[in-house]
Image (cartoon, rainbow, N blue to C red; front, side, top):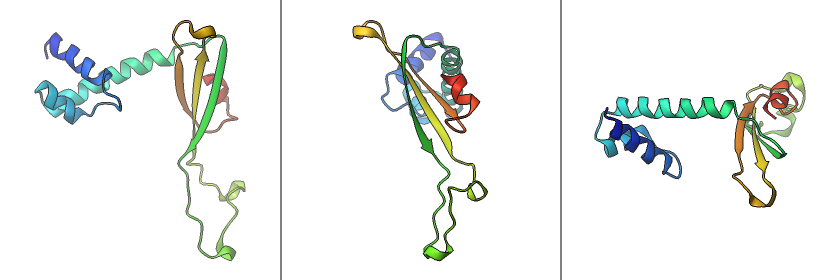
Length: 129
């Protein structure tokens, strides 16, 4: 690909609100699907490696969300098991942490990082903060 096509792909990807699919990017650039997919993956990898090394300073707000791991309970109450007990858990639930650096009086840009960890009280969560 030419350098102009790579820059155009970067521009299309960054300026899309909800992300850019490789199929849409291939249509916009006039290239093959695999070429657009590789370009998007390389851009995402470069951004993620930079974000992984970022350090937050000052006042930091942390919020978490549990995702996945839902098991549909049995219909009859007497057939249900207590999912709060350790032996009845499936360990597929993950915690998504959002760490946001607050800047005083709106100076500078607020930085936001996201991390996926097993649980809020694990060492991973402490290291993410």
